[in-house]
Structure formats: structure tokens, C-alpha cells
Image (cartoon, rainbow, N blue to C red; front, side, top):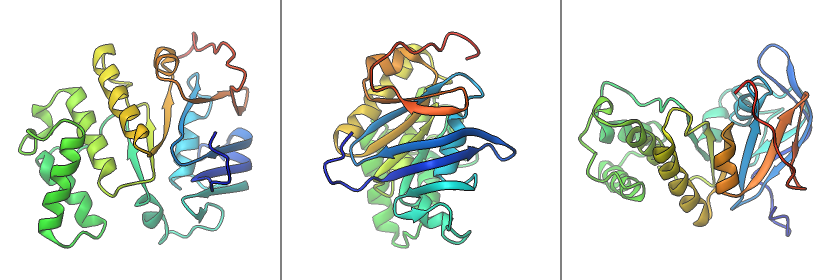
Length: 238
């Protein structure tokens, strides 16, 4: 944990996390600092994705304190939510690419929506992020012409467009075979090594044992950091 006076990008204090209907995690205390790689792990139904949804202000924070990229989650308005989300990159398990347009047009759509008015600057940035993820030759492809791993690389490129200080990744390897997942993890850890913090939900124990980072474990209505490097049981209900 990089707590040497650096201000956290994400911080929860005594926070109750809701899934939209009920409280799934009580009294969450969690800090994510610049350059951190933080895993959120646990069995299905333990609140992992609910934490992510709270971070991106999809689920409201009703109790406790929470700040993300300078925004107070208890006080954030509907108009401020898009501003918050521009400060971070989000990667989903199911890619969420627009199927009716090319890779380049998918990325251009995001840039236009986040205020990039200059077409030349948009084109330059698209080339940069595609090169960053090793997909520079896929700009003209449609999503259905890409493999799952390639689609996820494009999704990561999309997350990088606005140079976020933190990437939120919800099961980014969940739909991929082991070899492809390994490639995505190498990409994410490389991005992290350059200074971008990453918060990643996973139930794949092999991943967080191979690619080391801080580990938050969700179980029994709580989520706490595995500081002692204890054995984590994810053998059931995953």
C-alpha cells in the first residue's frame, strides 16, 4: 500500500455496500493509491461487483464514507457521475463493444462523448491506445471479426483513452481461456507498472497468485485485506 503521504484515488471508511436491494458488505474500509494493483476476490454473491458498481456511482452509497477520484460518493449528483467516470477506465467481462461499428469507430465514439472535438487528435489517440494493447492492425475490424482476447484488448484500449489514473476491471478474464487470460493479465500488469492503478474483480485464484497485488477478500458480509497472505478458499460457488 502506497500510503507514504499520497492521497488515495479510492477510499471507503465504514461503508455499507448495497447491491441495489440490500446490504451485501458491511463496514468496508479500503484505500487504493496511485500505482496500486488491488484484487477484489470472493465467491459468487459476496459483493465483489457491488463494490465496483459503488465505485463508478452506479449503486448509491447510503452509509459510511466513500471518495473516488476526488468525488464524494454520498454527495455526487447525477450530472457529476459522467465527470467521475471520465477519471477512470472501466473494463467489463463481456467487453461491451458496440457491435454495429468498427474498432476505430468504437473508440471514436467514446472520445466524442467525453469531449474530444478535434478529429485529428481523436485519430492520434486511437492509434496510440491500439498500439499500447497490440491491436494497431485491427482498427478497421468489426467486433465479431475478433477473438475474445482481441475484443478484451480493445476494451482495455477504450479504458485507456482518457489517460485514467485508475482502471476498474470486473472479471476481465472471466470469458477467456487460460492462455488468453494470461495475455490480458500481462497487458494489465504492464499498464500498472507504468503507474496506472488497477482494481480488478476476479474469482480466479491462479491469476492473483501468479500476478501479485493487494488482495481484498469478500466473505461473510465483509471485505477485508488479506495482509497475512493467508490461504484463500474459492473452491465453492464460483
